[in-house]
Length: 409
Image (cartoon, rainbow, N blue to C red; front, top):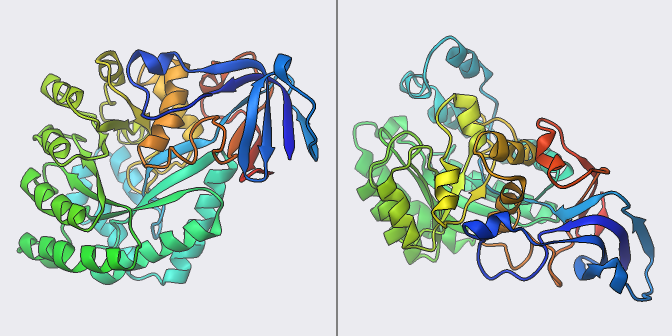
């Protein structure tokens, strides 16, 4: 057993049966002057130092002046990819838009061509290095999407890499099939053939191998329609896959309403959000997910987080880590952005990046909060005056130690 004593602030404590909504997010539960006991890979107990009783432990960590919180839960990434796309970064600096670059053969199709040429082992080694870096900087649960394969063989290759990653690390790793990320070149004149390939080849084969947890689609002008979302998501649901969908990144075309009808676990991006969209979300259990790193990198509007939270809705934040529109895996930066760019309070941002992120990828029974029995995946910060200082120091992480599966890295 390990005992962490004299914790200045122990954040996101308690039991949770759903994502925190509205004002609940700003009232983040925490304990001052606390202790926490770890038994093997689990949180055994915690409480105020005033209530600490004699207990036999193997190691004591003195956290005087330090804050302890759950590791970040990054519910939206594209971490498995072939190479970076810094040439497109320069093109955008020179004035081309994301859509213009895609129209010239860049963007998602560029990543797909490069990934199709890589071996599974090469792809795995690169992805493992990225994932290890994520963990070192505080990410304790992660969702990884496909979508850079765009063929049966390459989408399968990506899913097998994600499966290997899930067994190589001691954090929850969830796999999402995003074959509906873009229409591949070979089907430009017959998009129905590609949708048929997803529905009748990929989904049955990949679920039979138990390689995938969620079904996703990029429902957006120039990519996939609301009707195509209906077809693909229903096919995934028929094979036991929960929907998580990309919607409203550039336009509002009714994708949120359809996603709610399809009982999507999350709707992600939401940079363009109407009052009608917000009203629809109020009638659902679907969790909105903001991706401020993408807005920062593409210089597009930010998700209107204040409107979402003030409407009494839940909100999670994630990195959208990918080579084209958000090439950063830093949840620490995302938490800062949640405050600076999305106008969330530090408490709201921390909740959005921990317990709400856990619910947004269906791992809240395992992680995301300081709860007895959950995995001991914890961040111990450097000495800080309060948890407000965590997002205040943007571009830095305030981490002293990371504990994964009960062990200090």
